[in-house]
Image (cartoon, rainbow, N blue to C red; front, side, top):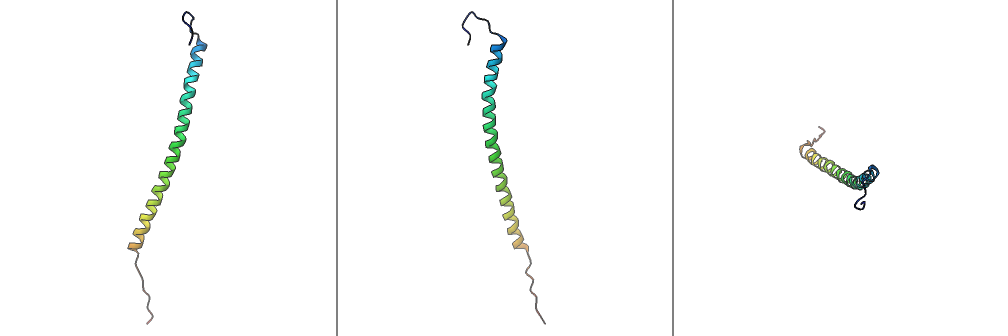
Length: 70
């Protein structure tokens, strides 16, 4: 901060603003990468569950055909 009695210049304000936005940008990037990882994991889990449910239903509903020779 500027000592008492000195005027705050535009450069001071810009420097402080860049400092604050730099910290926020770092936080956003780290949170974004974590969110992408969690989203991909959930997507894979949902696809796996849907596959297993569909496979189970397919086994239950499939007809067993027996062919006999006369």
